[in-house]
Length: 122
Image (cartoon, rainbow, N blue to C red):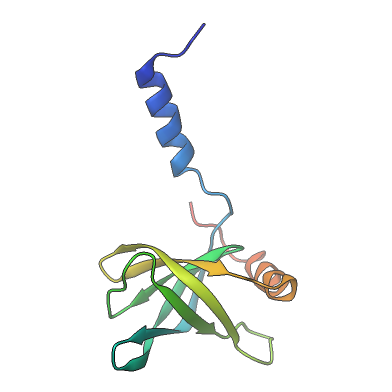
């Protein structure tokens, strides 16, 4: 039996809504550094969820999807803050979704170790 066009469209939409990685709730200070015409600008915000491949955060300045930024945040029990490159994947008002770029295995493991015990985002 072949699927109708509407069934294919529905299943592909559902597939896009599934996440590749589980997200975990958190609340950490977040610094986002972005390059503007007049130089680098540091924006302060909060990280409210974290996953293996990225994080969600609230900052008071709207960023543009596709923009490359630097993210800095401290994880409890880790001596130095993590400083990671990321790309803005989506924005809704001041809530931004960032995807990490070029994460080292050590950085990935640090994030996973931190996130595992945290509550899941539904």
